[in-house]
Image (cartoon, rainbow, N blue to C red; front, side, top):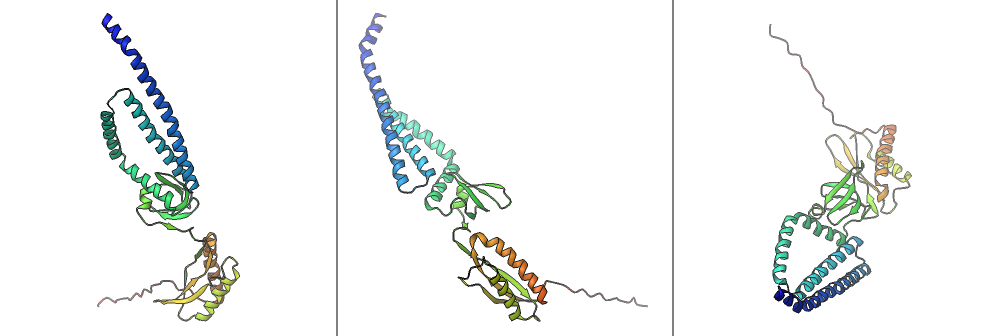
Length: 272
C-alpha cells in the first residue's frame, strides 16, 4: 500500500500537467476552430454563396477542426491516436456506405445551390414533377403543384434528369392550333384571329405575333397561332384566346371540324 501511495505521489504532478495541457489544447483549439469557421462563412457570403451552403460548409469546417483538436488533446495525454483514427475511419466508412443515397442527394443539392438552374418561386418540371419551387434543401427540393399538393423531390432525381424552368425567361410564346374547314376562307379566319390578338393588351408587339397555315390535315386546314406574352400572363392569355377565337369563328360562320364517322346500315333480305 505504501508503494502504491508513493507511485501516485510521484506521478500525480505529471498527470496534472498532462491533463492541464490537454484541457488548454481543447479550449484554445475550440476557439481557433470557431474563428476559422466564421472566416470561411464570411468569405463564402462575400462570394455570393447561398446561405444554406454557407451554414453547412461552415459547420462541417468547425466539426472537422474540432475532431482534430480533440485528437491533439488526447495525444497529449499519451493515448495512441493512430489506433483511434483507424477506428474512426472504419466507422466513417460504414456510415458512408449506409448513407450513400443521402450523400448522393446532398451532392446534388450542393450542385443545385452552386449552379442555380432554378430559384425559389420558379415553375419547373424536374424529377417527374411539375410545380412551383418553395424551398431548396441540401437533400430535397420542396414544391407545390397547381392543385396545391406538397411535393418533396430528392435532389439526385432532379440533377439526374432534364430540368425545364418555365419561369427562367421573362417572355413565353403561346402555341395554339386552330383547324378550319376546307370550304372556309383562310384569309378571313386569319383576320379574325389577328383582331382578337390585337385587342388583347397583354400580348406583346415585339416579337410580333404570327398566324400561318401549318398543315393541310385530313379534315381541316390547321392554322398555327404564335403570340408572345410575359411569362406570368401565359395561362390567362392562352385560355382567353381559345375562348374568344372560338366565339368569333362561330359568329362569322367559320367551322372548326371535329372527327366524325358515318355509319351506313344495309338491310339484307332473307332468301325466300
